[in-house]
View 1 (cartoon, rainbow, N blue to C red):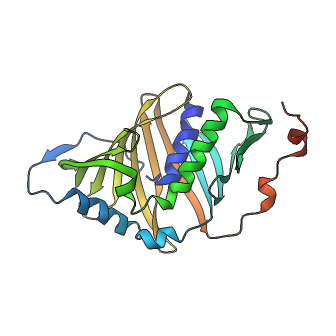
View 2 (cartoon, rainbow, N blue to C red):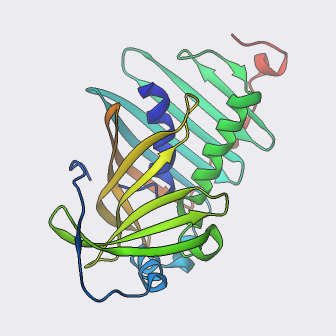
Length: 261
């Protein structure tokens, strides 16, 4: 279950996304004058570097470490454009796996689960993660189109700091509760349901260690907490607008010829 969860969670960390190693705490409501929810969401976009700067990120390579139960999983994510992604996962002493999406095809190679062209639910999951990777920067400043309803639920105390609690309903009807730091405007915590092959999982995502790279802000640490335990994500490095080798997106000849495990 945790392996399924961490893979889905990595997509989130790359999409926002994304997130502090402190455990989530109960938010205590503070009663006082409220700002407009629109201003809170617009301010978060500016805190992340602004819509214009984020829209200029066309490609990226991100390296991250995901820690689960004391095991470190090394991740290298390549984004070369819509439906053109490559995610490499490796675990020392266990094995590795690479998932590629290119156009209308997706495939996996490596010794963790075997080489194969993806179809059905596996293909749909690969394309969902590719879409989330595409939204890493594209989402910034676009809340008006991404969500059909937003509402300010109040100002709360979150781990000793004032934060605005906001409900956002996506165009599909999915609801996420976000907490925006009152002082910085940054998204510091989210409560959501994460879709996994085993069904939806309730998670709390806590963001921290925000840094600016090439004019845009990223959360370099994330904790994803669920009933299964905690998953820790640390971004080790990120490169923007770099050339992504075309060789990453070439279907292996053995799969092209109908091979695979």
